[in-house]
Image (cartoon, one colour):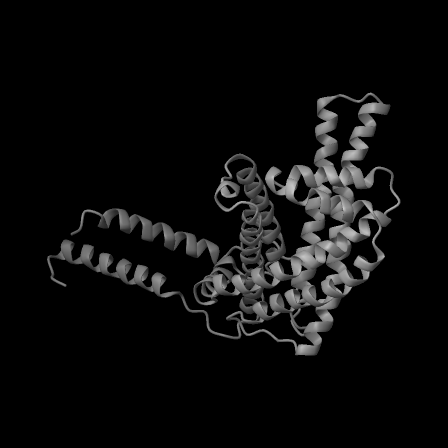
Length: 339
């Protein structure tokens, strides 16, 4: 008998108890479906869903759409009639973008967000509409490539939905920029006019700002999951997949920002083009997260309808075979029989 067999036996017994317990538990937004059933479908989608390949396609399409969309969005900034809004946004961009990259784009940023440009606005609108809808259509196609059998949209329906989603996401992104910028303006105003320097109050106000921003991110992801699938699929707007994707997105963005600010060396190796590589990598990670959240929603819906039989994975099969082997081995050692 292998010396690791007792430990494996305990591990398998623990897994068996967890599985039995999971068959009786249903988490919020799971529509009453047991956690065990959802986990089987979710593991199947992760194992056979080619998620990295689909995420690469989404990331590339979003990367192509990113710059036309941001140029169009920034050309709207000079028309916002809020005092010092443009200056605060400029300082916010300066804090976010790495120093060497900001030096290269500083003049362009000033020209775009400080000076109204009607010609650039019209061109940016057309370019942003074309490339952004292409990116959203690619995302919906990646959603349709799930291993679960869900209803798929036609090409025309997909494009119309992409335009609706683009309008919604544009509004939400604009609100994020406004809250990020106005939050700093409001805090600076309190410091100067009200002479507010209480550390706890300032932290509380900053926390409220970030709670609003994270809530807008959650709504953006929820709109993607709610509108991207076909109408015949009854998705929740507030869903388990949206909650998971928002949580993972916040962790990823925070960790990525910490890495870029503290440990980055990509500018020394790649120069200014390193920023483009960082943006593409971040888009790839966010695409992975979007697909993981979507697959969780699809797994819940599939487990709820049970249109296909639930089968454990090959890895789980090997666990149960090993479990039965150890059980018989222990029995034979006690009786003196041979296998």
